[in-house]
Length: 241
Image (cartoon, rainbow, N blue to C red; front, side, top):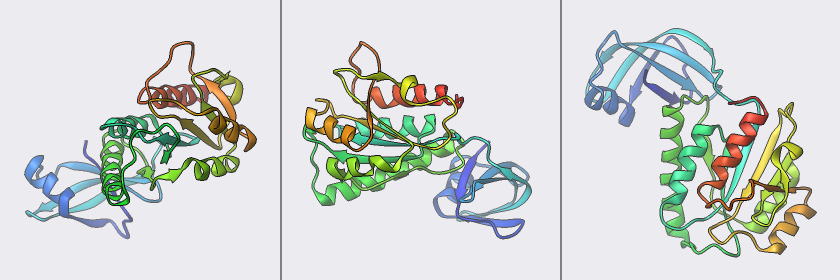
């Protein structure tokens, strides 16, 4: 069943416009009487029935509403170093499917990719579109935001705002289960390096800010693999898989 996001629904009738409406009418060729789900910003999912369709609008009526139960009970923020080529797109898509709450691209010492401000704004727009599409596909209760790129120092400063913070380091650290308790239901930050990993002083900065160094095993994972492995482990530990 089609899953859409809108800011709010004020009564039992709603009209969908723009790209979503065109997708329903022209791509999916849906008809009056068929059902779809609309999720609003307050995390409520609304089962709706299509009443009428034109080329640019789709009118629906709400049949039933309930709190979306698809969101994890932990809020994991992924601090991901900028990667080469289109790896960030894959990371964002899969991280959203796995339940990430927020994604913060960051510029670290070993980042090869260093786009200028104009390119970064275009990338951020595309990344947020990918996040929305992944949230629709995986039936999330929210659309995780992909923020503007931060420096590593800025990202490290935010470390102290979380119940637990883990920097995954190729030279070793604690197992995730030793850092994050199974009954954790707060906020978690994970820091993932670029293709070249982290500098030692970057790891030290996270440790000084209250974070801990984590390991994902004896094998060295690629930058696009590591965040997904970390997210899957955390979601499993906290009972969200």
